[in-house]
Amino acid sequence: MEFPAWLTGWLAGDDYTIAREILERGVAALFLIAFVQAANQFPALLGEHGLLPAPRFLRHPYARKQPTLFRLRYTDGLLRVVAWTGVVLSALIVVGVVQLAPSYVFVPVFLIVWFLYLSIVNVGQTFYGFGWESLLCEAGFVVAFLGAWDTAPPITIVFFVRWLVFRLEFGAGMIKMRGDRSWRDLTALFYHHETQPMPNPLSRTAHLLPKWWHRVEVLGNHFAQLVVPWFLFFPQPIASVAAAIMILTQLWLVLTGNFAWLNWITIVLAFAGISDGVWSWLLGGAAVGGIGASGVPLWYAVIALAATVFLVVLSWPPLRNLFARRQLMNASFNRWHLVNAYGAFGSVTKERYEVVVEGTADDPHDPDAQWREYAFKGKPGDPRRVPRQYAPYHLRLDWLMWFLALGSRDSPWFEVFLLRLLEADAPTLRLLRRDPFDGERPRAVRARMFLYRFSTHEEKRRTGDVWVRSEVGDLVPPVSLRGQ
Image (tube, rainbow, N blue to C red; front, top):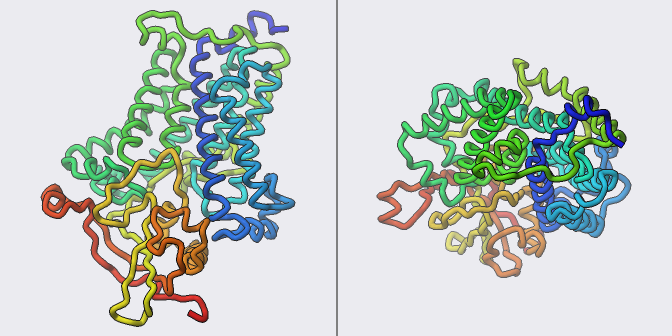
């Protein structure tokens, strides 16, 4: 049964069937990556014997209020069941199997994926304290209500995805204008490519571009984040042009940095602004779109409208935050991580500090002791090593090492990390690229601070080094296990 035509005409987003496919499959693909990453990293970082054990966290009254499957009990085995279940369900959505089922099956399956990941985020503590965690949770919940092929995409949900993109981009733009002066005087990109949390293979090339180009980059960023998002709510093809501009600017960020899935999910969500008609025009007038039903069944219209009203009600705090004098960055206003505030890099660091962790098999008090460096997968270490591309995969330990070098006060995990190195803990060592002791216990470990900068073209030709580093001092002096 369907609504009368005069109602179906406004509720059925018949011109956004390609957008729905990209949104559902794209968000599910990012969930899949996030679940794989959780299966690989969570036990070592947050498991029963992790750096910040989830079982200990769950004893706190705050943790017991969080919606999570682990509220009553956490085990590493249960975590893996949750993660791999999420992988399987996400994969089924990516390949389009679940979309073949009725929407009363599709929506619950997508919401199960959302809740499984929410369960992980809500016990993830510092290692899951990133804005893109809430972004993935919100996107998963909203996109679920686009429905399967037995209904047209509800236009209210399509527009709510655009509202999500607006908050994401405009919020990031406003936090920059209210934050570091370098965003206002157009010098932020003099530093950012070099000091960003995890550079990629092209970051050095981007950093060494002329300063006039960096000013153009900042101007382009302000235009894409402060002006363009408003046009997402204009008629077609204006909304499609706005979406295309944001997609192109996000692709530049993908090319020049590793920001986990932040840029990729922004790209996916921005496709909510591109209509089937625009796709047809891009393909030379070919008939495209029309995937699934052309109307919205009565029962599903009720669900979609109820979800829309629910999300609109939750939108007041983030809307008010966008224009608040003290704007919150990456804040959730409820325990379900729905309708959040977003923003990134309100301040830009001018110098890059790195924590270098070393171990020795010798007497640590001997001036001639040989110290060997532990190599991380993503963060800079060896000056000759070209940074790798990992995004949208998220290397959580490497990111926290960047915050540690900035003087993060919330770093109790680092002491435990050094202890695990002294114990030659296998799960912890698997988080690294190279263990210089090949699984054997070192006698002592230490952490030193270095100042890093990208080498110039002449320095690179002369030495082969990508980075130039100079020692600043000790962060943690040599420490050993008792009895060593």
